[in-house]
Amino acid sequence: MKPEVFKHRFIVPASAIDGLNHVNNVAYLQWCLDTAEEHWISKTSQKQREQYVWVVLNHFISYKNPSFLGEVLETQTWIESYEGVKSERHYKIIRPIDEKIIVEATTLWCFLDAKSFRPIKIPEEIGKLFQ
Image (cartoon, one colour):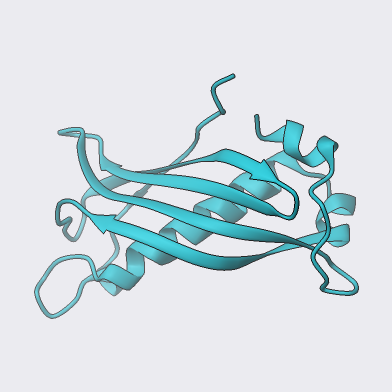
């Protein structure tokens, strides 16, 4: 089964532009994390969000093309796989006007109990929400 892709469009703000007059690398990572959080919130209940949290184990980012102030970008994210306490989330940031890929990224997340902050196995009910 192919995972559902969650999408978010936005306009590149001045705060994301660096000294080279293009988007700073750190901004792309933040946009990926923000979109992951939006996806989590869109699929889960308040009760689930109070019960569980995620922490990042690692990121891998590949920068393909620059982007600039005022451009419309689209962040796409999906859960590629999950097993045990870990979930692999993928991202793509594209420029819709020319369909150029700006960034491709992967984050390995660890699922935690929100009270103890200890890793716990991802329940089937959570996994199914994203597949």
